[in-house]
Image (cartoon, one colour):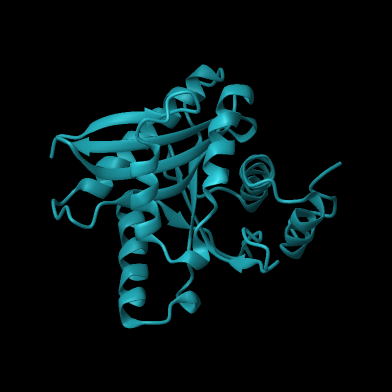
Length: 231
């Protein structure tokens, strides 16, 4: 499948609404983020260099077939994939893998622009089996896990990871962390903790605008370190 990739920016939002329609159709309302989060992240991409944010859309002919969003976290030289969505109307095999490959290439460019020789790692969050309610959700969860593992990711073990509240309910969400490294080696937990801290600061503080007190509470529940998230 030949895909044409386009990047949405804060200045050029031409494909934004069509992509957000795919986003809304792909996730239940309970886990959807407000559209303002995407706009704030796009705005941050203009001001928080060498950190970056990407909103990539893929087209086959005139049809939107893929949406990928990700942050580049310069302090830890790591990419953080937030969403990878493919159009369910397109049954062509390999669309997810092509989307993953494209965002990895873009994050690699961010790493080089930040002064590194190569990207160190890519991280993403996935739901846990305890979160699913139906057989279809269970099947989708297994498929996602297998997809990421086939593409070089491993699940971080012995680490409690909490996504901070993205809604006003104040509820933390236990999720799995998946990481891919350039050398395919598993990172020590000390490095995982550094990446999580960068994720909280760039994505959830600067992107989602979650209050410091809320983030500190979630961060401390993970027992990642003795100090506060904010100094």
